[in-house]
Image (cartoon, rainbow, N blue to C red; front, side):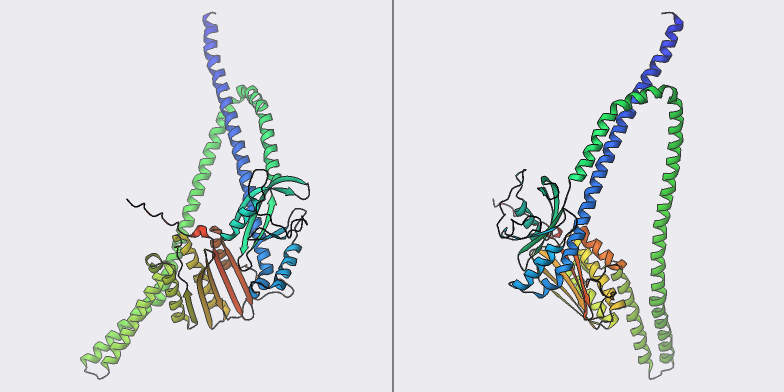
Length: 463
């Protein structure tokens, strides 16, 4: 090989090796990206299924809520009505609700007529999972999701199923519904098969076109990189601006509160003190009255400062816990609005997590705001209790309730922003928010599962 060939080889071989290396790297990166997209797609579909199950469960609970709440533990007539309602709640070929009692006896199963009246507590799926026992346990814990294998009615074959179970503790019933996941797994499996079959073709195709296009790709990548960087900088600036706007809005609100409340009170204090000073200097007999007025105005300013501080973040919630914070909230509500408000709490053994306590406090705060603004109520009650290890808070008033169009379901539509925020706070912890409203008033029930409780520390072994 002469010198010219050596120079050409030295110029071409590194370039070919570089192109092959880049091609291989791009193929691997593309494979990882597609795999990541498939995994994200699967997670999103599963999350959508979970949201669908929660919505369906809330729908079923709303449908039987009036009957269940007014019935006793042994009211067979009410139980029969609930059986009929849940049997009729049918959605699609494979969508239905099922009911078992806590002993494992089937109460409702619209798709498998041979199950009602028999005990299935020890039923195992093909993977050895104790399906009914685990679903009942989830219901006793306040509601939860469980995945297992079950016969799909439309196909007659075993398929993966995801169910949500919730308990009707008064009757010791577990109510559940589920969705089959075979369509999710089928789509992801097909996508993975297509990925494997196309990897080889992609490698050779990219390798063949990489040589003439390497410079174009490099230049394009540089341009895209610059463009993405500009877009990222622009989005970061927009996010920063939104944060600044939110801060400015909060500062404006506080400024209005300070100007309209505290500032006016302090001005009144100043005038009262000036008046008292003049009366004292002139030895007027009503100087004490002017001083008392100034003290009253000063007390008003102090109360306004405390109210602003309490609205931002009540210290009592961090220092003493949920019950004292709710007691203070109710007291301030009565003092501010004149509406009679009562609070009662049953001592519970375990303590809530800090985030869960904050969520319940904000729910109560939003509920009282709704009572003040919309309910036209004269009385409101807040009761915190435990139910099968779950924390439950009930807020009820004697106001005018929700307005509803005629002929619709009696359950109020949770369309307001405040109610949606309360629902999201409960859903974050896997809890439920139930609302019952009529002309006699509104009752809001917020329930948190056992997972929202602090885990008790194991006792140290004695030496």
